[in-house]
Image (cartoon, rainbow, N blue to C red; front, top):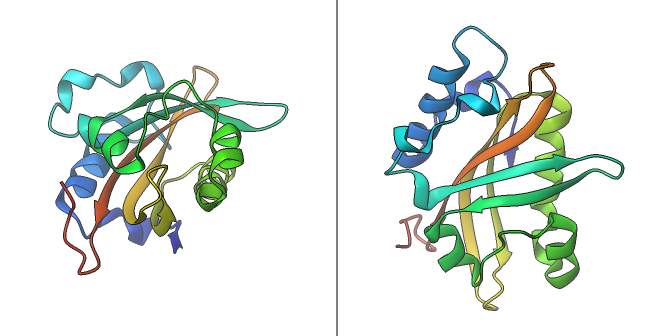
Length: 159
C-alpha cells in the first residue's frame, strides 16, 4: 500500500512519525530539504531504522549508502553498497520497494509504504516506513531518506 499525499504526514508508528517530523524540520518552507543538511547526530535514536539511498540515472537505480542495524537484522544481510536492481535480481520480492522509490522521485514528495516481502534470510516480513526525498543544490531529487520498522502479524514492532 502506498500513500503519496499530504495526509500521509501523520504516521501510525512513533519512529516513522519522528522521521517525518525531522524531514519537515529540515525542509522548512521548501518542497524538500537538501542532502547536505542531513546530520545523523540529530537523530541518533532513528539511525537503526534509517536507509540513505543515492539516486543513479540512466538507467534509474538506487544505491544503498547507509542501512541501520534494524534494517540489516530484518533483511537478513547488509544491503549497503548494493543497488536495488542487484538486490532484486537476488530477491524478487523486494521489487515493490524499487517502485516506491521511483514514485517518490517522480512525485518529489514523501511516500508511506506498508508492505510484505521475503528477507534474504528467507523469512516473510512485514514493513512499515516512509520514503523522503532529499535535494541537491539544483533542487533535483538526489537522495532518498527512508525510515522503516518491521512488524509481526499483529502489527507490533520486531526488535
